[in-house]
Every structure is written in structure tokens, then in C-alpha cells.
Amino acid sequence: QMCIRDRSTQSTWVLEGLLLSTTFHKAKEQGVPVRMYRPEKGEGWIDVMERAKKFLNELADRYIFNKEKVEEEKKVVKKEPAKEAKKETKKEAAKESKKEAKKDNKKDAMKLQGKGLHEEHKQAVKKEYRGEEKKEVKKKPKSAEKKVDAKKSLPKVLAVTHGGFIMEFVNVYREIKGMGVSEKNIAKNTAIYAFQVACANCKGICRNTSTSCKDKKLAVTMLKENDNKHLATK
Image (cartoon, rainbow, N blue to C red; front, side):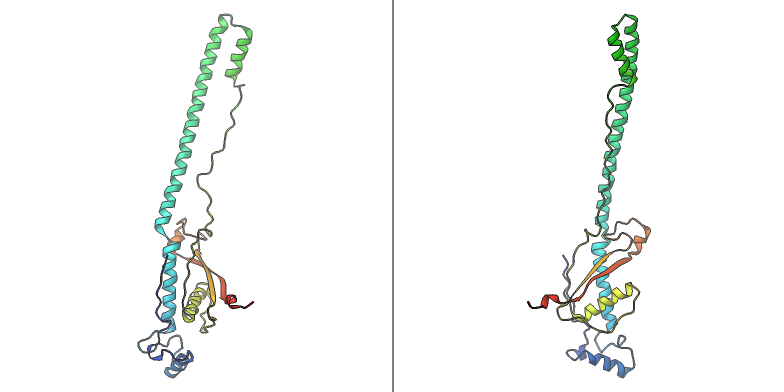
């Protein structure tokens, strides 16, 4: 559903094609931290991290904090209780009708009693207005709102990119977790990283159930890290 064209990770322009260690040497020559170093007409690691952060936020806005989807679900939930309310109204009307019928039967019994109605018939009429007839089994109304497993509804997004961008995406994850950033690119060739991203309050797709949802706070979990088992030979 989403196609992303990523420019060459950490485009170093004049340093393009050189060893990664060259960046460290150039930063040392200029007397700046390696993450602050920005080559001429290129971008530094902080710039790459910023792009990784924007990428994560774009995914979150599209798939986690989807306002249109939330509004549609709210409409569906609102319709169900209305149906239940109509059922309850019908039940109340049926009860009132039954009460009126009992009163009428009682009046009829009193009239027939004076005319010498057969004893068995009188007893049957008495039982009816006393409420000794079979009681109806009341069915409990079904819950209008079905429980939804928020995690099952999370979409899956595949991103194919370079090791440097992966390093900075991991740094965004580390920043969310309150950990320090790493300057080491340890991503193996064709390695797989898997993350689960969800609304921190709703534990899945955001349903705007709290004012904290407006802050768009994310809960990010790393499910798989630097996995290249698919390269193993039998």
C-alpha cells in the first residue's frame, strides 16, 4: 500500500563510495562529534535519523491514527445500541399490554361470577389474572459493542532500505525507549528487523478513547533484530 523511494542513505556527496570510517576521520579533523559532522552538499547521521523519525510518524498517521477509520467505527457502534433501545421499548409495551389484559380478565371474571359461572371456569380465570400462567424466559440483550483485538488489526508494512537508515531507525526506537543513540552500524547484509508500532494508550489502532490519544504517543516494540537466518545453508 505504500511505496517509498529512499535516497542513498547518508548521502555524503564528496565522500560517496569511500569507506564508512572516512566519516569518522573527517569529523575528527573538524573537531566535531561524528553524528554532528555534515559533508559538503551531503547529510549527517542526525539528518538520516530525522528522516527515519518522519518515516515512522508518517506510518503512524496513516495506519495507527487513521481518523477516517475511527469515525466509521464510531458510527457502527452508535447504530447497535439504538437497535437494543428499540427492543427494550417493544418489551415495555408488551408488558403494559399484558397488564391491561389481566385487568380486563379480572373484570370479566367478576361479571361471570354473579351469573353462576361453572366453578372450574372461574378457577381458570382466577389463575390467569393472578399471574400463575407460564412465565416467559427473558433473553439477555447482546452487547452492542464487540471486543476488538487491537493488535490483530495492525497492518503490516515492508520497508527495504540500507544499513545506515536501519541504524538510525533503531536510534529512533531507542530514543522512544529512553535509551541513548548508537553510532555503530551493526546491521548484517540482508538482515531483517521487525517492529510493532501501536498507539500507546489504545495498545493497537488508535480509537481516540482518551485525551492522551491526541498526543499521538507511540508504543514501539522490537520483535526481531539483525536476523539473517534465512541465509543459513542446510
